[in-house]
Structures are given as C-alpha cells and as structure tokens.
Amino acid sequence: APASPEAGEPRPGTPEGGGAVGWGEPWGRLGMCPSAGHHVVYWRGDNTAHADDTEWHSPYALMAHEREIAAGNSTFMPKFLTFEPDVGGWNNVRMALENAIVFAVATGRVIVLPPYQRIYLLNTEQRTYKRHHIIDSFYRDGVYEWYTPEKYRERVLRGRLESGPRFNADGSRHKSPGLRPLAITMARFLDEFAPQLGIDADPKYAESIRSGKDQRPWLREMWEWFPHAEGVYHWEGRGPLMLHESVAGEIAGAEKLSSEEKEQMRLFKRPPIAFMKAQIEANVIHFGGEASRGRMLAQWYSFMYFPQQRHRSRMQRVARDLMRYSDSIFCRAAAAVQAMGGARSYASIHIRRGDFQYKTVKTSSDIVATEIQDLIRPNETLYVSTDVKDPEFFAGMRAMHGGSVTLRFLHDFPGALMAGVTPAPGVVKTNFNFDAEESAEIEESRHINPDPNLNGMVEQVILSRSRLMIGTFFSTFTGYATRMRGWYAARDGIGRQSEDAQVEVRGGGTETYYVPKNFRDSLGPIGVDPPKDNSWQREYRYGWEGVESSPPMP
Image (cartoon, rainbow, N blue to C red; front, side, top):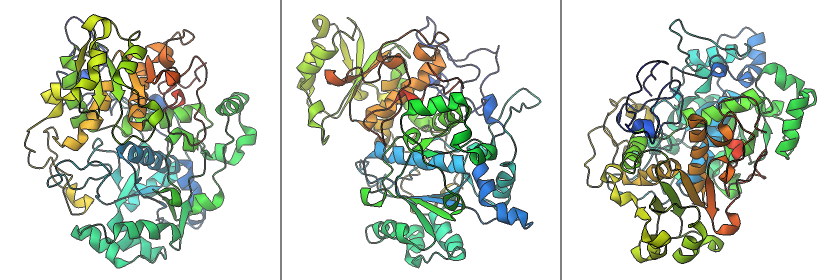
C-alpha cells in the first residue's frame, strides 16, 4: 500500500457530512481508488508499522541452524514449508492458507508456493479465468518476498536479537522483513532443493507445472505423494501448537511463563503442545489439504497458540495487514459502500442456500425477516449477499417496517460488479500457465481486476463495513466478514476495541449476529472468546481483540 499521511496532514477522501472517517495515521491508503478507498481500509500503512513490529525475527530459524552456526558455516540450507491448498471452497482455502503463512512467519520457514490451479466453485468465465494462484490472484502485492540465500541468512542470524521499536530518521516505522515470508515456486523447489535434501520427486511434477499441462493426471498424484516422501515431516493437523516470541521464551517453556501468561493460557481452555526439536530442525514440513492428509480446516489462532500477548497481537497484525485482499477487491467494494452512504451507513446480511449442507440454518425469508426485524431500522438500506436467485424469496424482508427497508444487491452497483468490463493487458494473472516467478516480471497494472470470481471477496468487504451485520452460522464466508468487522472496530475505536472496554456492546462488540435465531448471539458477552478445538463454524473474538494493543481484553 502507498504511504499513509503523517499525523496532521489533510485527510483526503473524507466525505462531507460525515458517515465515515477519512484515513490518517497509521492507516493505509488505496491509491487505486483515492476518493472512496478510505471507507474500507482497516490495515496499517507499510511505513506506519506498530512499534512492536519493526525488529522482530523468528527465533526458530536460528534454533534450526545452531549446528551450522557453531561450525562457522556462511550459508544455510533453508527450512521449508510446503502445503496443499484445501480441497473445499474459497474460504476453506483461505483459512488453510492463513495457517501456512502465519506458521511460516512465526517459524521463519521458506514457503513453497503451490502452482496455479482450479479452485472449487471459482469457475466463472473459465476461458479467461481457468486457474488461480492461491496468493497472487486474490491478495495484495507483497504477501511474500522471493528467497535468496543472503536474505535467508540475514533472517536466521537476526533471530537472536531481542525485539524492540525502531524508528527511521523521518519518523516512519517499517515492518521487520521477518514479518513477510520468503518464498519459492513449487517448480524450483522440486528441481533445485528436493534433490539436495534427498527427496525423490518425479520429474514430471515440475515439468507439468512449467508446461501448463492439464492438471488432472498429475496434480492430485503430487499432493498424495508429498506426505509420504522421504525427508518430509507431514504435519497431521495437530494443535494448538505453542510458538514463542524469542529463543529465551522457547527455552524456558510453558513452566516459566509469567502468572499473567499462565492465566491467559487457562482462559484459552486447550492445553498447547510444544514445538519439538525434531520439528524445528525438519528440512521440510508439509500441510495437507484433505481430511486423510491432515486438512488444516481451522482458524490460524486455533491451530497456533502464542503465549506472549505482545506476540499474539503481532501475529494478528500479520493476518490483518499482510494477508489482506488485493487493492482491486477493496476498491470494487468501496464503490458500493460509498454508493450506500459510506461506512456504517447501512445494515447487511449474508443468506447462504445453494449447496450449503447445514439444513438447520436454511430458513424461509419470512422467518428470517421476523428474526431480524428488531435489528434493522425503519427506512434503512439492507445490503444482501446471497446465492439465492429467486427475487420473490426476499418478499418478507422487503415488507419489514411497513415496506420502508430498501434491499440492495451486488448487481445494483456496477462499479463493484465490474460487469462487462474487458480485462486490461497485464491485469489478468489468473490464466497464466507459466511459472509464478515469470508472472512476477510483468509490469503491475493499475487497473481494477474484473475477474467475476472475485465477487465473493468483494461482497465480504461490503458486508463487513456495515453498521450491523447478520451472518449465516456454519459459513466460513460469513466468518471472514466477521473478523474484518473486528479489524474495522479496532480502526474506528468502537465497541470492545474502544478505550472503555468494560462497556458491553451488542453482537460481541461489533454488532454482529447470526441467523437462525438460536445462533444469534454466538459472539457472546464480555470475556475471552477462545476457539473451541480446531473450530471453523464461526470466527472468535480471540482472533482480533488486542490487534492494536498488547493488554488482553477483559
């Protein structure tokens, strides 16, 4: 993201009459849509890093290379993380990807990027958008940095430094390089590093990636091969895994946590497991994408436990600031948000039907209208995100408050839908058949990506920026919009993220509810809201509360 304005500078894009605040220190900008982007920004600018994020590097890369360091080696064979994208829909893919990225950052591992591939249900206009890259097609530029031996060595050796704030001469604060994972392509890993590590990979895998051949004959075979490959440590989804902030913390272990840290662990309610020496030193750790291969279907803060509160807040910012959707997605959403009056100027609801397997949450429009009418204001705009095609389904909602409620859908906002827009040269990265490192050489386009397969991500942003949101329980689509609402609350200084955190605010502090009514208040009252097991049915406040402050929420 471009640099944020310093404190005291004008706040561009602030609408007259208020509804939404403009951006300012320390929040980022959307240079692609400067007149509307401020409505949807929730992340810090790249030059306004949190003071705790300027120097930190993972202690585990240092610990993994202790023998080489003691022997005086000047270069180190990197430790890798390989992962299979989840076999489910996009939001299951996203959850597993978050686990991989946060784990790679927390442990200092080089992440191996899966090849472009088909993603379940992202199949609109397949002639143009045949395959997607799990990161490049959906996320901001800069989620990862290309691996070099020099960069890796520097990060390893900096793992012995204690964290502390570092300011530049101009007062700006840049994030530590250690908070962005190094990466290589799968083709490079198989060609160059697998042989050095004694991993016997079939040459056809790398050849098929580069040639863009039909994936059906070989991709599934490759993912089935990985967990059983010699020299690969297959992580079978066990958690929560305890990961410390520093070498000293890892050596001390859980027994020597402070009394406050022990109390936080008690409130977490699930005993974490230690990151064992054999795991730290494993050359390759692999995450599977199917149930039989240790599927990572869980929120990252459920799979990993960070006992130091400062470090947990740091990893929350990795998930928020690093792992955010592309500027194109946010700008498309901003067009709709601005058209409805700006941030927090409307209500929103997500109604999931279609192939949704949880029949207990599939209720009629009339029942939904009855259950939500007390939450919706007369004469309010209600944005509806849904896969229901029949307009008559929404008759009950249109009748709320004597018919004064106005329903809006994505198709009402051409700027967000991008219907009929021809892709600009260089903007469509989703149909490339060549290596990701080659696609990175293409000049970045400043045009908004019209890929219709991004519409779901656009709608998540629109949903999350409302005054009040009603989601569908069991939906991971609703889940991510819920977490974004938590991040917006931190930006806006409202609810449980406000200075007076003892004041209870409905809907878990973010005015977020669920249908049907028996799940309505699942986000709960004041108190710690830890994830239950490797849970995915909803998001938990534990994933966002404290993102801007180290003290635990009461």
